[in-house]
Length: 80
Image 1 (cartoon, rainbow, N blue to C red):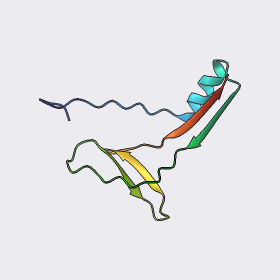
Image 2: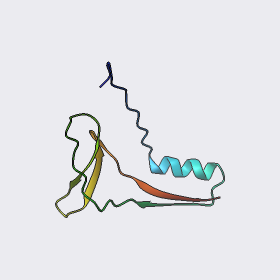
Image 3: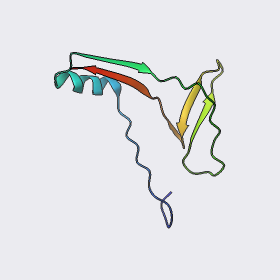
Image 4: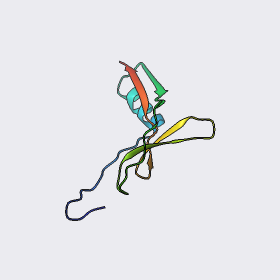
C-alpha cells in the first residue's frame, strides 16, 4: 500500500541455484545451504498490512510469511 503515511515494501528473493552458481563463478570452493526451520508460532498482525506470521502445515511444520509472501529462509555458508 502506498499513500500518505505508507511506504512501499521491497523484497528480494533469489533462486538458490543461481546464487550458488554466482558464488562459484566468483571463486567459491564450496556453498552449503540449510533450510531455516522456525520453531515458534507468530500470530498474523491485527491490521491487514504487511507483517510476519507463521502458518502450520498438516504435519505441524511452520511456513513463514510476510504479508502474502512466503519467506523460505536459508542459512548459507560460502567457503572461498
